[in-house]
Length: 125
Image (cartoon, rainbow, N blue to C red):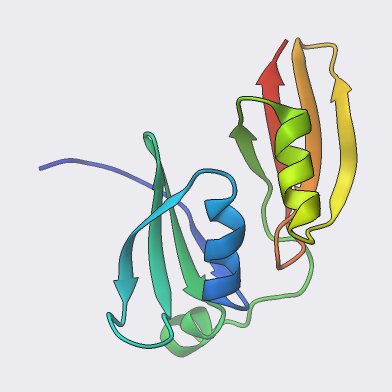
């Protein structure tokens, strides 16, 4: 049995979030329910996996309400930070920090996902 762990992100619109993460190279591998508007989608990108669950899930299952402040930061390596920023910008997403060289040897930028969570994009220099 494969032992694997992955984050599940609580999102306001599963479909909108799938569209965003697809621009970063994630591919949908699972959807529930199978027909209609999904409440949960599994994504994979190489060896990375993400789950996207509608914000109603933690309330229904755990009795907790998802807040509105950023709830996570995702760090994603891409082939070309500048090109990836332009793809996201053209798709209408907010670029929070333009590409810049960092002292630790990476070119990095930040974008907001559809729920306002910061996503770091990086390429080794």
